[in-house]
Length: 299
Ligand code: C2E
Ligand code: MG
Ligand code: MG
Ligand code: MG
Image 1 (cartoon, helix red, strand yellow):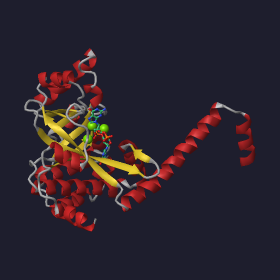
Image 2: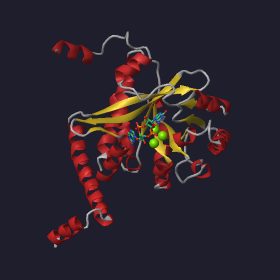
Image 3: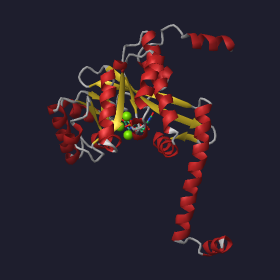
């Protein structure tokens, strides 16, 4: 049967069905390959973090950083974070990867604090699967203990979808995290199906307005109106507002006029590796860390 089917498919040339099946199997094959390579990367230190500054809209000062996962595979090249996360969520790898992201980000931050970097908070993205895992709060407590980062310097970014997957459980977990001193943000706000009346019972400090809205504020009157309404509603509920994806002065001006609190985007800085970020924040004159010294001596 398989032979007959193959022969048939070959015969049909650019038939839609054949195209569809080929497409499907190459997607599945790529996911299998990515899963294997991702396991290897995890075990052999192939994952890294980039850090993107958050900036105060009025003062222009950096108010915090967001840790973003990066993976460059030797064979496959750079894999987009959305693709990594999607595969990690499907395979359960999101739990060890999420824990690695959390502990690496906290350790890096604690190291920067110790070396005299301005004491900034670090934001970590948390997926629905992590949030709903029964040991999540315990893992977070352990990471904070092990790295020594005070919980007040840790922020979690959660999407509306992650919270609304199981709202009652999310409420219990978020209350526990909030009592630990961790602050909570809604990421990609405006792209999910929730609304602020549903979200108001959660202990959330800020909304990050998705960059698909920011993109149009200076050119599309509908985007401008939507963003204006989001800002007003958020502010009347005493939530801070962060604009994502600010790329132009015009967009920043619009956000400033609406009294947005912070922004993130290429206009100020792309996500940066450790060395570039240290340069940006003026830490390049600091003494090398013990690890860096040890590395230098080995060379
Ligand atoms: P996100 O959390 O909403 O992160 C913001 C994304 O927008 C980042 O993409 C960032 O590089 C990009 N960005 C920032 N400013 C600009 C700008 O001005 N213009 C444009 N065009 N893009 C901008 P990135 O790093 O590719 O991450 C994509 C998404 O992957 C993240 O969206 C987040 O949902 C997910 N992600 C990344 N790292 C992690 C992680 O450690 N854990 C989890 N669960 N998700 C992660
Ligand atoms: Mg985020
Ligand atoms: Mg976002
Ligand atoms: Mg996103």
